[in-house]
Image (cartoon, rainbow, N blue to C red; front, top):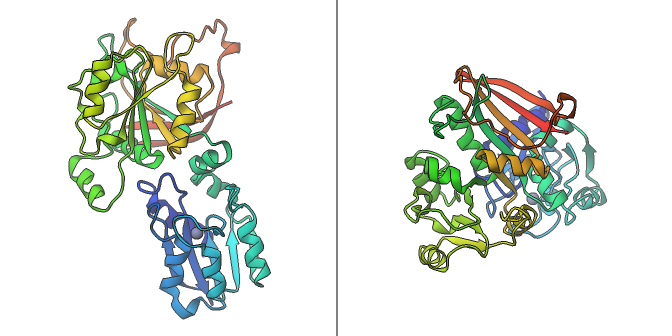
Length: 369
Ligand SMILES: [Zn+2]
């Protein structure tokens, strides 16, 4: 058995609840048998290693531990896992890579080795990095990991000329989008999309929304870019039971009475400096969101938002859902406009990272170069 792969698949169970923390899974093996395992569910709850050690009990002594990220050696919201591993007298610890968090990086390994525990680094490193791409980017750059998502027809349209986009893709694709919102911990749209679609930006159906609340799992932040302050006060996105997780990013152009009404609803409003086009300055926005421990954002459009994020090279990955449909319209919306590219040779290029079918649609994951 590949114990690290087993640990990675356990880690995935935290995917819709763990942000802004990393996904971590842990397997404890002794004499060819798994004697304990665990995964990290959310900030403030025990780390994967602790859950696995508790499950293994005395069997952890002399056992081999496989954990998908370097065990922590600092006091965060919970005590250091390294101390627990040493106290349990494990024989070896296997990790794919070091934790880039400067509070940990290499420190966890050094402390384990000083206690006489053998540490092996490198197993399934590429898969582990891909799994924690958002966390690793956030820790290394202090900027949220940005995924731009759009759903389009075979002829490249994201909406009709009237702005209708419900629904280009099927229910399975839309469920996948909801999971991605939870994984990244935040979703962002422009005010035009907020007005045209009037989305709630919830992670799931209402029942699950309540389940999450009962388990103390926060819902993804909902961020609306609205430089002029034109979002109607009746918008669905303003009606959540956790209004403090709705953020309206605006500028000094927003009317005071509008701002006051939003504040009275407990909605978080933030005034940003403007860029040369009069919109919210995106660099400042991302710095502020990062300071709020928002480690990832799913940017969901519309066209103007995609265009400005791509023009500023702020996208880490594209999630493009393609539905086997043809719209056939000159005026329908494409995902991106106005990049001023006249020749194919000058087109922005990317690498396909993953390609798979979801229901009747295809999902392409692309990293832009
Ligand atoms: Zn830990």
